[in-house]
Length: 216
Image (cartoon, rainbow, N blue to C red; front, side, top):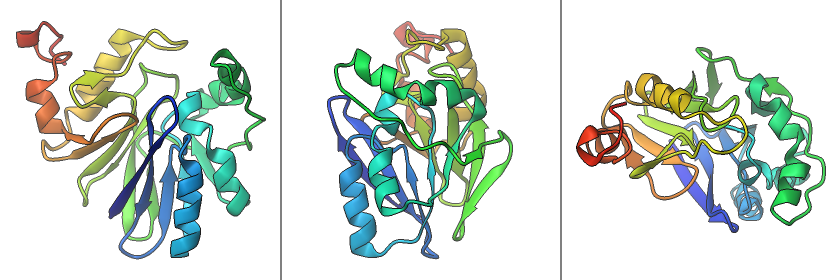
């Protein structure tokens, strides 16, 4: 799998273009840098199977219109619990001082424990709420990469002070769905640089008691 990162906007959100060795690709969490993703798709003539949303916070969906303009029929996948926040995206945007029109309606729903296949890649869908309702993590075991949205970052974890956030739920998600992955799994987060499960297990100050955090 080839992973390209597109970072932009005031939130510094990371969107991803994951391209399978067999050719088909997916767009993950198209944020403010979505115009560059659209340019890359067209320049490389990529066959995009779907747009996959880890959750529905505004910075992870506000570029969706740019992708749908060049791929008007591309499926949009989201967890059912995230639909309410997704549909409230214009109100989210207004609270941050910008306008966003209605987003296209999602076409498909993630089911935790199921998988999503494209090309020769298959994502395991892991349910990881706590930062936001309906948050999912997408893990590809052959490539040993996981797209974790805003669950965990390099040296940090997702905030829980936004609507639908809950610290204990987030820690449970990290403990059961992230730290159970192989240590060399690369974690592609919604903000900041990639990291690994092993690095966060031993060095994340929010997870280990030595630094005053909780043992996830």
